[in-house]
Length: 484
Ligand SMILES: [Cu+2]
Image (cartoon, rainbow, N blue to C red):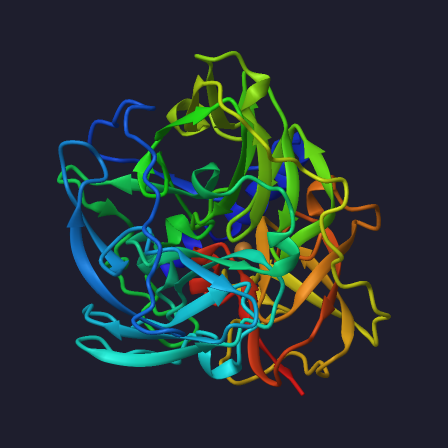
């Protein structure tokens, strides 16, 4: 317990002090690399390969360890879907039911969650619904009865999501539909999935993460908790990876590009800007296209969130370097990646003033509160309770909507499985421009109360809501709800 309590109250007090100082934007504790950091903007941006079905509607992917070059001149062992990091991108169609057969050849159990998916409960990646190591397998069924959106998938193993995602078990999944097809948006080489995450590396090139404390405290779920007490706030790395490459560079033409931004970090929040200046035209949120585009100078993005944006590189002279930066960080982690505008090119794309007809608001049938807080015992809890599998905190009815009031003592990116929601208010005031659209993850900041209108459509059964700071999640900040 000593490792747990050492910083137990420091975090709470520190959070309050930082909030008072007006700089409460950092959501984790920095873990430094023990090798020389690579020079930024030297590694070309990789684009993950697109998964190919073995036959129509069926994909097979094997989780396995592999050694890949992330930091130039050294290699890193990853735990990867298909032995790659990120895993392959699944390019899927609305309503085209697919099965993904996952085979686990790792030495640890896994559970795969399609984040943002409207998925039957048996395929939703419940944390104890494990695929056994050493050759276990499971067919995950995805009916994909949902709007076009930028989704991702990652491991969700009870108590070990943080270390297993850190070591590579994550990838992107795009759902497309006819509504999106009809828009003149950039596509093909001008549509870039950008999975942003931070990592730390050891001298030998391996991923550096926490080891279980020597004292060996147990997690609140009864398992060995992997999170060192010093890192209860969450783990941040000092190397920023995009699609698995450190501070990569992408050559672009002076045209519009569609960027699918995903924060796949364990704990790090970002406030993304373009330097020397420029705008993101947001066309989509976590759960699909917006009704109309929204222009942003900067985008706050917490773990699990996505933004679908268009950037028009014709606004820059040919030869320009346009750097995606994170204004919340200083030092090397302030850089994310760079675009170099190589040449002019024809561009017949546009961002129409009307993008889509998202589902409307429906009247909520009730209001429920979920309080995300560190308990006096130093555990991350929801409504005062550490996670108890099989004990639902709420039973919403299928086909209804509810207001969920999310309150917080720290940075908690709250993710709800199955349900999509609209942000109604922050501390009783209008939400931020970046809260636009239907979402599945919302950045709840210290001492904030965020009201969301959640729709429970799709399936009855057991789902969960949890903090998507993966170290908080592993330290029991999860809860079940059951759709009835
Ligand atoms: Cu949290």
